[in-house]
Amino acid sequence: MIKELEYPFTLAKIRDLNVGQRVTISGRLFTGRDRFHKYLFDGGKCPVDLKDGAIYHAGPVAIRREGVWVIRVAGPTTSMREEPYMSRIIEQHRVRVIIGKGGMGEMTRKACVKYGCVYLQAIGGAAGLLAESIKEVHGVHLLAEFGAAEALWDLTVKGFSAVVTIDASGKSLHRRIERSSKKALEKILK
Amino acid sequence: MKNGHWEKNLFQLIRRTSVDLPSDVEAVIRRALKKERKGSHAWWVLNAILENVALSRKNDTPICQDTGSLTFYFGVPVGFDTNAIVAHTRAAVAKATRQGYLRQNTIDSVSGASYDTNIGSASPVFIFQQQARKKVDVRLIMKGGGSENMGSQYSLPDVGIHADRDLEGVRRCILDAVWNAQGNGCAPGILGVCIGGDRATGYKHSKEQFLRRLADKSRVKALARLEEKIMKDVFKLGIGPMGLGGKTTLLGIKIDSLSRVPASYFVTISYMCWAFRRRGVLLGPEGGVHRWLY
Image (cartoon, rainbow over all chains, first blue to last red; front, side, top):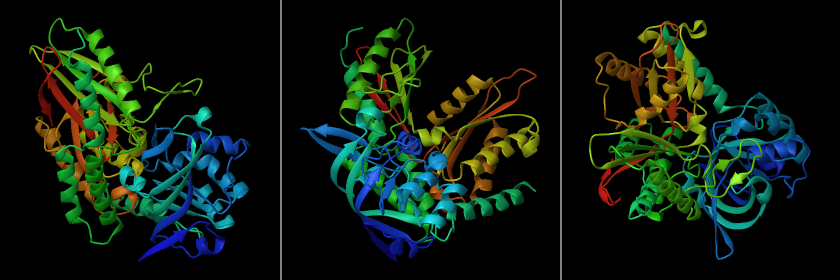
């Protein structure tokens, strides 16, 4: 069963999600990646209100057509690079949904439990498919500072597809696969 | 060298590479899908990948937003003007960026400034080789940063993973690299491996393995056997597409070797994501298309 999740992502909605559940997201979504996370971590002012919101680790291909921004494609980027910054951002801004690929580490997992947040994995490389669910570009922030790929894009999406891989109770599919594949590897090399 | 058709056709090469996954890669993904349990995460991911491939081909949009680093491999005749073709290629890259076939993906490493055109000191990368034939052989590989970050180089012996200086040691390095990568390189991936060489040539040669078709087997029997064995090993790891579990962790592996000095024994592994963007073209003396490759 695919669960529909709509902005604002309140604590009650988030606590209801479990690892392995597939979801579709609708409503407001902010992109942010390497420089944005470092910027917030260092105390930079956030140009949007992230409370009960979602950060999507992505750097889209965006072009300007007749003065209007068009997101051509936008798939997820590797989330692990934001591991040093993510937990503080969750704590300070009360972001409730992180979307990316590859999963995140212990600090983020613990912050998900403590503050009520989930990590969703989107399909890496499926950039055109995911861009299909972008219905509107409201604006772009920090564009001059960070460039188009690293800017904060303020989007509205509908039916954006992902799977819960770290839930608010602290279960992590990434940790599970890491452990089971380690065991399999040891068996192969015996 | 006059501009002629050069810039136009180099632009077409970039466009095709960005939007159209090679048919041998797509066929292997299709075969992998049949091995996954219906309804599983692996099945869901592979289906979405195939849907995305069809969509980007139809909509003429990049397969992946990370249009990556561009490496051009040129095979050129004797006396060929390489400076001129570098200029034409750069112009084609800038145009492809303006039109949204490439993301603004090039950054000044000190100031952090983003270059609008994707033309930087290491972007795109040019590798030239002189050939006896009259035609110009151009191949392009676009490789995303997520997969590039999963590359690794081992210096053998490596006590940590019990890898000695033999093919069993090489196997241990490769399996270690696959485990470390988990889903982070956008699995199911393709590995290019170089045994030997120095640190720089090792990486260069490991990436050149991506020019081989997926069905290609090493002509060195021991390496062909190793390629086959790794594929069987990896099947049992259970990492799966995007690291969400499943059978398909790799789509292929290509291994080759270079000579080395007695003191060094490097095993260098480059990881390519499933969005394996590789295209090529044979161009005539005026830059006209003789034949598309792959």
